[in-house]
Image 1 (cartoon, rainbow, N blue to C red):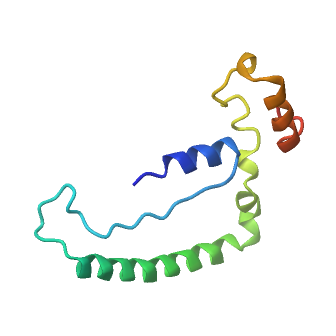
Image 2: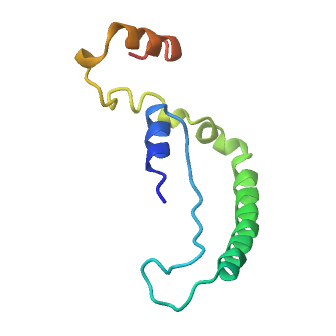
Length: 107
């Protein structure tokens, strides 16, 4: 599984984005024996519990005033302005108008 498309789109839109990845088994690369549905489901249940704990702890920390700018994603502002894949010459007037509606003054 990959989160590359989502991460790339979030970065271009300057949206703060983070994933939590938790494995259920390693049979794709490691010969550790048979993998059963029951085993995978057991790991998924444990991962769900761990994810809830992790998210609660992160949200508690991010609710502190000292993290306000991080939560608002201000550090991302303007960071991708010149990282858009299409050169300005390759952008149609109609596309730029649409982009300006979404991101006024950005392009």
